[in-house]
Length: 410
Ligand SMILES: *Cc1c(COP(=O)(O)O)cnc(C)c1O
Image (cartoon, rainbow, N blue to C red):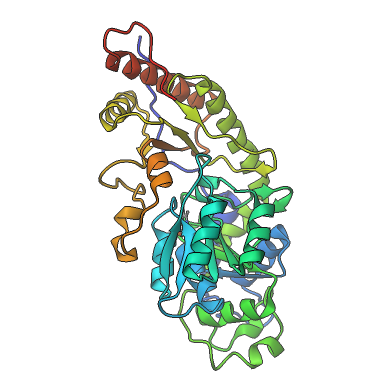
């Protein structure tokens, strides 16, 4: 009997009942706009900011319309000028270079290592070569580079660091929450991330002027005094007529849905970690398949899983993927010629101009990605691992002319 998986790779958990009740209350009173409050009322958005600041330990927090908006807002607040180069990982998701371009910057891609994090040597080369002042560091798929080394290097290079924490909300490096190393941490609360409000974003910083600029940029209509996780009015005084309004506020409905999810983040990280570990164990020592080494200093959120099929020919990868999908296991491949769903990669982002990252190309050519929704059980994930392992072995055997055993491709 061939085993088959029947779960959905895109089905997230429901919104907690508490969030549903709070959302209904907002709908019943109708004050969805964040600044539409009655005397004595803070509003769900302002309280969400206060609670997320407390969760991360940041001084200031701003809730916005999306993760992409959050990154663009941080870049603008950091003084990005038209046409200025902004360094970012060559392996990231489309909204990252998109946010740079939308804010008027020019994305410059930095190589990644086989552990899927930014290559610090190439970062130094590209920073010196372009004279860039800004790094939009993407913790892509939750893989965190050595943040202590990175921050020391960026200090040397005079680079301001803005962190894209779309996949690291709730993660840590050496005990420091992801998003707390750089000048600004940017998060997404889109459905496929670690808290779900459909769409949404959060920004954190300790820098009062940057925080004030971000609040003004987000569209505060001089109502910044209603914020609870923003600097005092004196910081806004000198800025309020100079910073443009680029509306991208969060609303009270989404904030109401999100607030009860903050205290759930540590439990979600533990559950994701369990699923991740089961999958990792199930795929260990599969010939031809390389797992990603997770450093001990990294407390990651395993909301997705990656592995490499190093130097497999495209036809063999395609055969492997179709055999997996035939058994209900939906894998994404970052090496495909044409992007499918979220798998576009830097050569597809033509507006950024032709760039060449040969190390990254070689890694992405064999990079397989899978979502791990929390609606999966440990048994589901063990079954998925058995299917992937069997199909990797089967394709290996079929492709090796005359060989009885699967060839080891490393
Ligand atoms: C989802 C995502 C974003 C942006 O999030 P949106 O809320 O969809 O704009 C940014 N970076 C990465 C790596 C992402 O996956």
